[in-house]
Image (cartoon, rainbow, N blue to C red; front, top):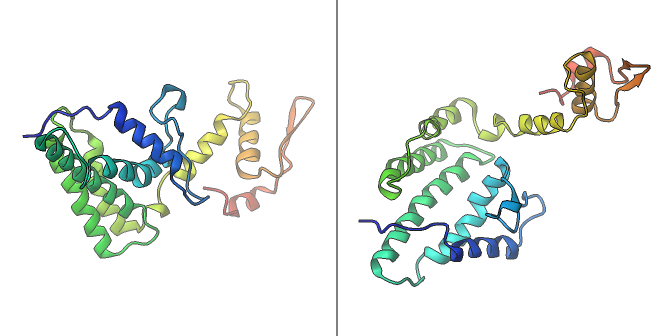
Length: 217
């Protein structure tokens, strides 16, 4: 039987923050707030969660729960090791799905890891609730077979576009002004629209050229 655990203990959170602060990473890897877990750190974005779950979290949890660590009793050590193995199944699934290339062996490995994680969830975390996302995660295997690596069809480019749109100045009234500003800033940032006596003069390329450009989602 698993021993009830408190995963938000100060020791574990301190270790996670220590790993985030001290780990040397490539410049292209998205950063994660050093004060992860604090209210001042805010909510992590999807790409930051990917970095956290595939880089910093495994290092942190292995160092505090893995082989060679000491705990108050054998039962606690055994429970923590089961939680660690369960978490690493999810980490492995995410790492495989986010690869730049995909093979039959990797797709099957993803399906094995994600079904293992979903299947063991009620035993490892009895208070967890079944979510639709758990079922959808298993079907990612089918999407990998149909469309290839997740990078070719994930939503990060659209999330980036939404972020740009959220920072556009507007008067909360939808109309041609907002439409042209969106087109100008989001698709042709080097050729902005300008206002002329309350009207809009679009300084970008012609419509057909805009449609043909690779920047258009």
